[in-house]
Length: 139
Length: 139
Length: 139
Image (cartoon, rainbow over all chains, first blue to last red; front, side, top):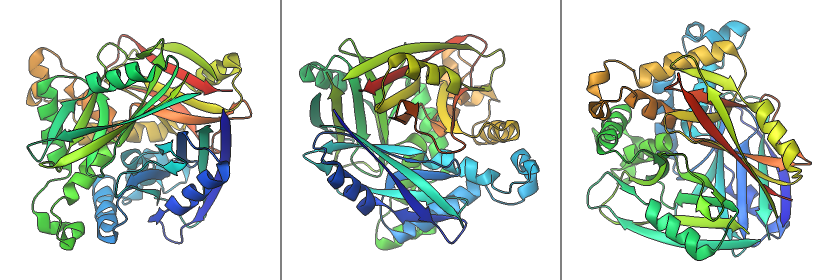
C-alpha cells in the first residue's frame, strides 16, 4: 500500500469564499503515483469546508445567501461562542451544513468523478492563511 | 490491496425520491471478495445524495417536507443558479444537507452496520438516469 | 494492509449531548499500530452523529439551539415518523445536519489534525447505550 500526504494553503481575502481546488488535488494524485485507492480531502480548520458541487458562480452566490439565512453572521452577540472573544460562531455552523471533507475514489490514476463534480474549499472565516489536507492511500 | 469499482444506475420517475440501495451495495461487496476494508458510496451527480438512515416511509416524507422548507424548489426565480436556464438550484442545496457520500467499514466480508443502518440514494432532481459510484478497497 | 476494528459505547444521560471522543479514537489508533492510512469513525445509530469541530462549551450550546431551531423536537405530532410510536423524528433530521461519520488521515501513527480539530459524538436521542464504530486501515 502506498500513501501520500500534502497540505494545500489558501488565503481568502474575504470572510466567505468558495475556491475550486480540483487542479491542486489532481496534481497531488499525479505526484502520488497512486492508480487505485481513496483520496481524502479535508479542511484542517473548523470554520471551513471541503465539498463537491458545481463550478457555477450563481450557485455559489445561492449557497452564500442560503447559509447566511440558516446561520446568520449577525448579530454576533447572539452566539455563546462569540463571548469567548470570537465573532465566527456562524462559520462553525455553516461548515457543518457544507461538510468537513470529501472522499473521492481513485480509479486508473484519476479522480473518479461524475460529469460536473469539482472539489471546493469553502471559507466562512477568511482573511488569513488556512490549510486543506490531502491524503491518498492505495496502489 | 484489492480494489473494486462499480457504477449503479437509478432512474427516479419523480423529481424527488429516496431509494434503498443497500442490496446493490451488498452485492458489489460480495463480488469484490474484499473481507476487510472501506467501502465508499457516492452520488456522481451534484443534485443527488447518498446517505445512511432508517428505511421508514414516514421518515422519508419528513425529510422531504423538511428539505423543502429549508431549501424550497419555488419560486425558481429566486435562485441565481436558475438564471442559467436550470430549475434545480434547490436540489444543489438539499444535497448539501443530506451529503454526497458515505464511507462504510467492511468487516468479515460484510458492511459493518449498526442495527438500523441502510444506504439510500436521495434524488432531488430526478426524471432521468443518474449514477452512484461504489469503490471498495481492502483485502 | 492492516485493519483494525473497535466499537465504543456511550450512554448520554440527556436526550441531547456532545461528547469529545478524541482520546478513545487516539487509543484505538495506538493499539492498531497503523502508521499511515485512514481512520473511519461513524455513529452506528441513525439518531446520532460523529463530527469534528471545536471543544468549546459555548459553541456546543449554539449547535444545540441552532439544531433545535432547524428541526424542533416538538410538537412531536408534526412528524410522520413519530406515528410509528417514536418521538425521535427530529433526531433523524439533526443527525443529517451534523453528519454520520468522519474520515481522518493517519500520518506518522497519529490522527492528522489541524490545530483545533477534535472528534465528537453527537447524541440527539440519548438516555440509552449507543455505539460508535472505529475502523482503521493502512500500514
